[in-house]
Length: 327
Ligand SMILES: Nc1ncnc2c1ncn2[C@@H]1O[C@H](COP(=O)(O)OP(=O)(O)O)[C@@H](O)[C@H]1O
Ligand SMILES: [Mg+2]
Image 1: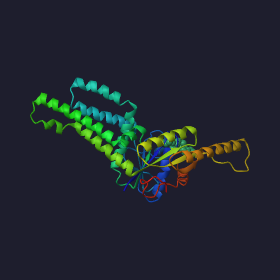
Image 2: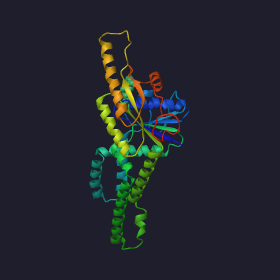
Image 3: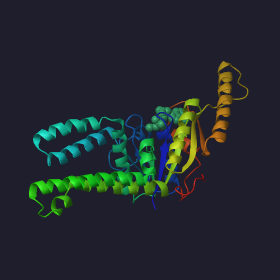
Image 4: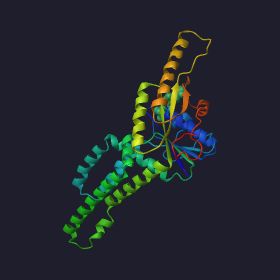
């Protein structure tokens, strides 16, 4: 069975680094692994020094590891084009222009980006069969998770839309063809089909996320990151999704004991502050700290990545998607 592992956290905390390192550990353990990256800026491509596309591609130098990159911007555009094509086929020319404007606007709302991204997540989940482990470098955002957390709400909502659609088709038929073959238009209706498909998609995603997925949050030892992580934990908990653990990245390394210059004193003070924060994270946050990673002098890639992977000793054994304890 394929297991899905999500790494969430604010931009820059180390999601890409941690998910790539985690993926290396999976491969080391003999798992056929796919990394799914969603951040066109610094991404899997930089870490592995290789370009990836929309489809899984083997990562050079690591047998059993593949990667793909989702570009949310392009997903939103594709989604928009698809809708327009569908509507063009159905509406009159004047209506098309008007609807186009509405669609463009709808696609500029913040949720559109997440929705398109999530759609691709679901595609990947559906075609994950060849892999033992699929590692998502970013977890679904709060709004998407809330939808999944409330399947009844979502179902009611889609059913209401379907109902409306059916009623309007009914009226249309009565007006246009006067009660003859009343099911004809309804059966072939692309909008109804689409609503039905969306409903199934969300049901599938909800099941997979609850039963076959594990969530980890990556954070830094600073106040902002702690607050942010607290909020994410709440969202995931509301969605009844299991957070397996926290990865605290970018801890300040301790200077050697004989060093006593200004730099060493500075580092020691930082280390002490971070130690307090780490204690607070362990005491106050509702998920265990499963790994801590020191800050490296340079960007994490190549052999440094393998080094970091050595600091991640969690979540490899099968059953990552069961219960909420690290292993
Ligand atoms: N422990 C670390 N030590 C040094 N550099 C790090 C460490 N973790 C991350 N980085 C660097 O910080 C930058 C942001 O990390 P990244 O993993 O891309 O974050 P995210 O994916 O959350 O935006 C990258 O340049 C990465 O190489
Ligand atoms: Mg990233």
